[in-house]
Image 1: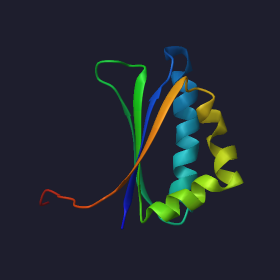
Image 2: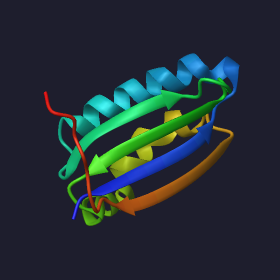
Image 3: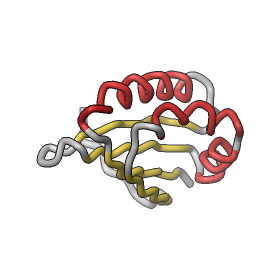
Image 4: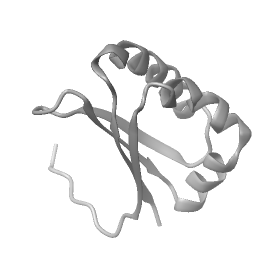
Length: 102
């Protein structure tokens, strides 16, 4: 069963550029070679510019947990985490999904 990982975070305005630079590096490395990773998004609140949402979709929760537990993960996300003042992490199994017809 696929999984959705959600991070609700706070990034001070003065760290926004550093945060986005770190995210860019992470997303391409993860998309290019982490088993089970399907896609991700980074979103900035329309009403609170310091609030951000990062979501990622994985083939399974186990695939995400295996990547998260590794030393490579900790080193890769360290520059991004240094920009974050608050964080909340949520993990979901995707039960149903609807797509609009093309």
